[in-house]
Length: 200
Image (tube, helix red, strand yellow):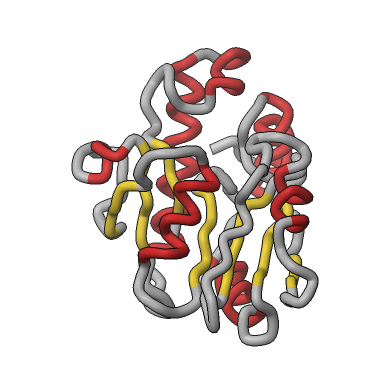
């Protein structure tokens, strides 16, 4: 499941918009999300759902790739919205990722599902202290470790890990970076230009 916020001007990437302007931030959000969604939604090794907020954009909005099946995230903070998916989706392992991680590849999803063969939870740490992926077996019981998590903070990962009982096995994947502010954008842009020799 890919969690995505509708890339609307003035509502998308507000921290980035404060430095680059609303239009540029919205365009960056659309480009990164579209690339991530296309990369993951077309892979036949899993069933992929795009969970959208605000909810009405699950059925409207030309910015979503047509290959992605959409559903609303529902009300509440990020933890409440993820917990709802943990409880309500059909049985089986579930992996949730964000749509703003440009370096996210299908291989990361493969690794997450492989690790769930040995662990109860798998998380992908983000550079800012949060996480870009959380996965769970959802068996023999469904555990939702999202209470008292300070979202969009340097403690989000630590808060979530603290909610998981020590009897459950946890695997951490490699650290990736989501694009939320001007610093993360500049780091990614610099790597992209260095790797490709072109800013496009």
